[in-house]
Image (cartoon, rainbow, N blue to C red; front, side):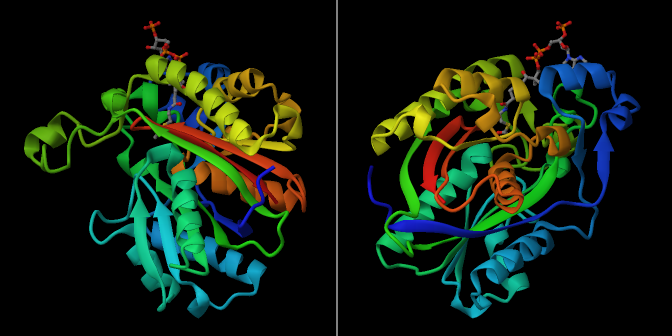
Amino acid sequence: MKRPVVELVGTGRCIPRNVLTNADLEKMVDTSDEWIRERTGIRERHISTADETLARMGKDACEQVLEETGLDVAEIDSIIVATASPDHLLPSQACDLQATLGATNAAAFDVGAACAGFLYALAVAEGMVVTGQAKHVLVVGAERLSAITDYQDRSTCILFGDGVGATLVRTASNSSRGIISSYLKTDGTLGKLLCRPGGGAVQPPSEEMIEQRTYFLRMEGRQTFKHAVRKMADACEQTLKRAGMTCDDVDVLIPHQANLRIIEATAKHTGIPMEKAFVNIDRYGNTSAASIPIALDECVREGRVKEGSNVLMVAFGGGFTWGSMLVRW
Ligand code: ACO
């Protein structure tokens, strides 16, 4: 096993108060609680109100991490936010969060890799710590997908929810804790299968954009599903191989929560029993970049991830981007 040099320490999350149930969605589009539960495993998701901005929710989650680690906000050197649904397009979400948190000594920027964004952000943070660019990096996954979801499209609106999760990346406090290995991959040729066609520089805001609802997220669900299953399993294998470890060494699998069937297939193909896989999609739906840090926080607080646990995180999302990371907690 490779010796970790960089560790994850402390976790936090913030979930909006309001709940949108499958029964609520039955009143909005032609769907049923039974269809949603059988096809996705989702029962409900949380939807932010106007005052529950990502900056505000991010502050909550980060303050929990600061409390856990005993760090003062002034000791934070960098904030990286993974998001596909920022409060503003400019400045970045991380800049808003840096201001709200009062992290006056931190450089702040976003990482855009959709549902795999948190793992990409962790890899960037690892590099910053290794090179001495930063000592303490807050890594945040933050989404208000409700703002970019088309609630007239039954194939996507049943899936998404809002929330924020966070952790801290720093030099490992001992040689057995921390990031053991990781694997990141992209296939931009498949980008159109999961995208927001309008609202960017190619299709700037216009009446047509509003009319055709191209500002909202669109997804070819069936095709995305197939790629997700194959690529998440492959990412797990590659990460374990790089670590010189096997599926038997994994104590907890934390998969991106996009669909219960994808989680089950990933666990099966990787050779990890479902009892080791953490699932909270029933309560939150798909929160994209926020799903892994929210799950990690729940695992740590419930004692499912404890000192010495080997935690395998894996994600797949728009881009397509995917990746995996093995961490000794
Ligand atoms: N309620 C009832 N029926 C529905 C609904 C709904 N909400 N949505 C679709 N259907 C219908 C379809 O119209 C279709 O009907 P038809 O057979 O008459 O044409 C039928 O149900 C089956 O549709 P599929 O799209 O084939 O359903 P599937 O079993 O694939 O489930 C889902 C759809 C849940 C979206 C699934 O494909 C999926 O989870 N895809 C992957 C999602 C994912 O991993 N995304 C990546 C991360 S997200 C990110 O990066 C932001």
